[in-house]
Length: 146
Image (cartoon, rainbow, N blue to C red):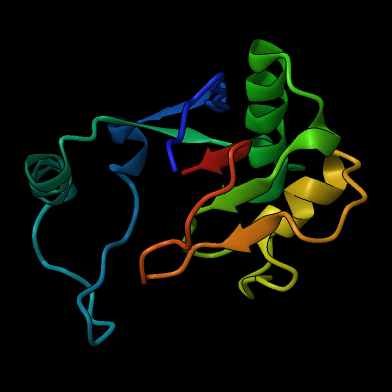
């Protein structure tokens, strides 16, 4: 079966936080002991490992499924596909939804299922959570949200 991407969407949060914002942060080792290096050195080490100088943060009221929903809406608009005609939504993520101020991850239902709900899709069989195994054969109209 061939898979064709007919549209794509993304949601890049507008709030930009430069690495200098972490100059007054406290950094700890894996045992919870504060690191003795100056923050400038720690931040530079992070940059050398990740290549990241700026981070993007979602609006305080948004969670991962909100960002996925925005990206899905853009992909659907670009492709001209109606949400209800999708064969599937696949969403790869690490933590699920975590509202601001909470430390507990909320992974049930899956992000793909939450995005499907926000798209107002009523059919039952079209969303999958990321699995470490290879995906099953993908239906023809599928949105993949990394």
